[in-house]
Length: 204
Image 1 (tube, helix red, strand yellow):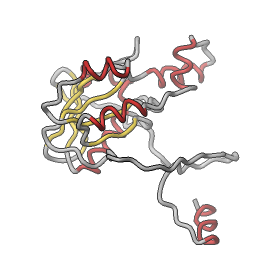
Image 2 (cartoon, rainbow, N blue to C red; image 1 turned 90 degrees about the vertical axis):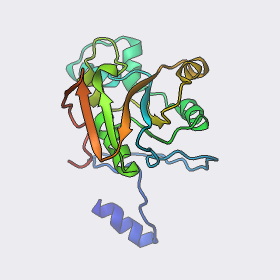
Image 3 (tube, rainbow, N blue to C red; image 1 turned 135 degrees about the vertical axis):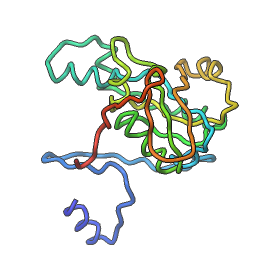
């Protein structure tokens, strides 16, 4: 980061955010800028909103474990990690149907739910038994799996259009919890408190 700071000072630029990583190899990164008619940010969730997730979780983590052990993976599982599909059309649909906040799951559900909770000033409660898991993946592992790029989204309590979302996108949309007054992320499994790995910690 010291090198980035020096380079920015040399050209009079500022770092606003983005993909900040540490590596001993050369990395080429791409940034796309644009505009949105109704941007949905991490901030905006309210107590009483439902917490929903697109697709299924845990496939990327399962694929990564396979890569690390040299196990041969079927194409669908391999592509889940190696060729992620950004949920752009899903995000636009959710934005047009009342989404109050949204974040993609790149660092793990628990980690990214914490970022959404902090930005919105609410507590996010997640019921692990409700998670839509990849086959053979346990809920706790699905909640910790990073590089999923599914969307974690909050929607008003009265939202009942999940079936319409499925027809429009071909993806499941599953309610996994709710927002409450307070802060942080609370996870339960079958009504009992549950602890899940925190997910990827940048610069840890």
